[in-house]
Length: 115
Length: 118
Image 1 (cartoon, rainbow over the protein chains, first blue to last red):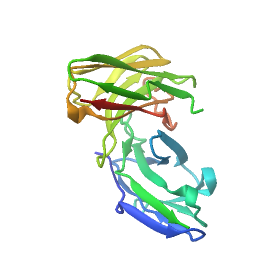
Image 2 (cartoon, chains in turn purple, blue):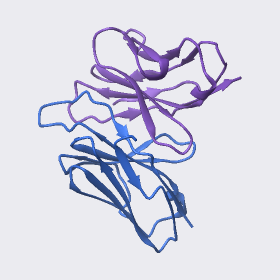
Image 3 (cartoon, each protein chain N blue to C red):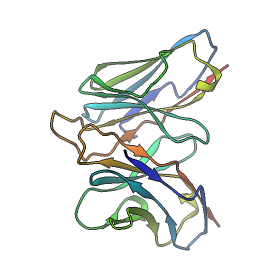
């Protein structure tokens, strides 16, 4: 079975500092991994995905994520946080070796960037 | 503009009402999804349609009834709901999966329909 863990409910960071939002996953096969962001009263917006190839993936709004197979992690990072990055962030996984498996989302991490 | 449009954005209904949520995607996708997002709970997958065929019904109560007349439209019919059904209902779409294939595409979400059941 697939699962996604986001160990932190809340992450606080000062504006201009680097940020990391953590994600670990479990799949029986090989993963496709995704990050989404949700602003208040809005739907989820796609940020980036890892399919194959380079372990460092760059996405929208200056975000990037690093796939680490040995640690089964896919942490989201940004070198310099903005107040406007404050939102709810979701990690998701899909098992690419199991046809028919759907996306599984983590519980979300609320990021607060303090001015 | 996300390419996935949901209406209405807000809905208040009594427990005896019948209403419907509508979702339309303009992305040429063949798979559509309903998710439920409740406060302080993980995102819950409700239904999946792939090439208009329902491929997932995640133990959803029968008071929720999906309909997918074509690959671009998805409905969620609501009947005799309970207050605990109050939530944000999110529609999403992705590339569909033909038999034997697995797409790498991400989900594209609508803005959601905020449902309040009184």
